Image 1 (cartoon, rainbow, N blue to C red):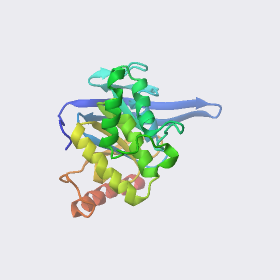
Image 2 (spheres, rainbow, N blue to C red):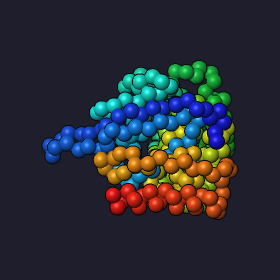
Image 3 (cartoon, rainbow, N blue to C red):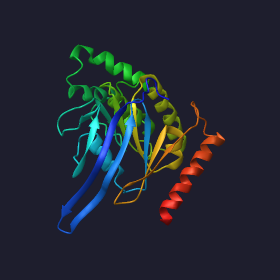
Image 4 (cartoon, rainbow, N blue to C red):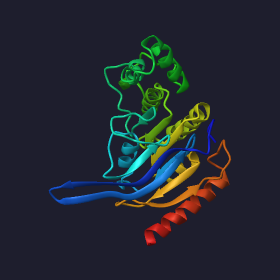
Length: 261
């Protein structure tokens, strides 16, 4: 359980739909999607590749807008271009600016955020760099970093604005399993320290079970919510814990019922 986790809803998704219209007709990505995320909760959106999870995350991050429905943040409707809560975003690829050092990449998020005064930037950059384990690499450039270190830098950049909500779009999917396991553990440590509300997109069942308080199971396109599964396994969790395998088995059975439906 994350620090400061509460019963109130941080995010409410109500009747959300997204479709695109082109020369070939209309493409429905998802429809009538609804779920809530509690303050301080670690929620995983789990579904097959290409089902619309990333599109949903973009709407939560206010970088896209739905065709129908609404998203409430802290009880207020999300309006395109109006920030309801400080939100950090970590993408599938690190998306670091190649000609900027780690420190400058992290600072870049502060330059577009008017909350923190300029004189506090250096201290904040150093704080989050140390939080993600990159102390000593402040002046390194992206091409001098391993894949795992680039991902750490991307997480630091998202954390620099001190977000209330952290949205993560399969950030470990391009890493080897050993590195991914290490970073999952580090991410949970950061979540515990900060009390962030995290929405994490994945198509990796065991990753979802290891990380999440609750897993929202999504269908293929047009995406809809199939079920919600609580991962009632105490923290800190171990990859060898039989209870994790049992939770994985239970959700896998839901997946199998979904495929057969």
